[in-house]
Each structure stands twice: as C-alpha cells, then as structure tokens.
Length: 158
Image (cartoon, rainbow, N blue to C red; front, side):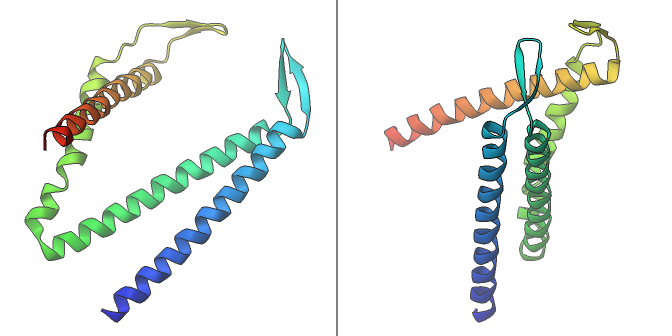
C-alpha cells in the first residue's frame, strides 16, 4: 500500500508541474501572437508574426494529449487484463465502436471534386477523410448531446 501512495503522489506532482508548464507556454505564445505585431497584410487581413509558433504549440499539445491518452489506455488495459480479463475485453467495446463508426463514415464519404478559392480539389483520399471526420464529429456530437439529456432526465427521476 505504501508504494501505491508514493506512486500516486509522484504522478500527481508530475502532472501538476506539466499542467502549469503548459499553461505558461500557452500564455507566452498567445501573448506573442496577440501583442508582438504583424508581419504583413494579406489582402484585407493582418498576418501576426507568431502565427506559426501558435500552430506548432497546438500541434505539440495535441500530440502530447494523444500520446498520454494512448499510453494510459495501454497501461490501464494491461492492469485490467491481469485483474479481470473479461472486464478488460469489455473495455475494448468503445474502441471497436469507434473503429466501426470511422469505417461507416469513410464509406459514406464522397469523392466529388470540391471547388475552393484556389481551384478544384480532386484528391479522393483526402476528400473521403474530410467527410469521414465531419460525419464522425456529427455523430459523436449528437451522441454527447443525447447522453447529456438522458443523464439529466435519469438524475431528475431518481
């Protein structure tokens, strides 16, 4: 039991410091983005000097979130597999449903040419990927809203 308390305190401290380091980086980069001036005027829009810095910070944070989520999921699945293999396999249902949703929305995607301001876009792979992500977002958002209402009704009944 003592090792568990030490590990939980260590994990808490690490996450605490990482959280505040990310907050500091976000504040600094947003400050640079908003207050450091503009590089050039593009059409009627101003181009802030640190646009790329902000985009790279967002990429970094997104990659870090994905990496931490995957590592935590693998560790949790491994420990659950040791404790209760049946429950560990049941936990894969969400992943299987997500893969099925992506496959279904991929098949729904269109390869029709899209005309943008830069001209026609005809790459069928990226057109289907874009539709897949949009349709998946719609389905997941609808599921989220539905679950909020269902949980509210369930809570008010009980």
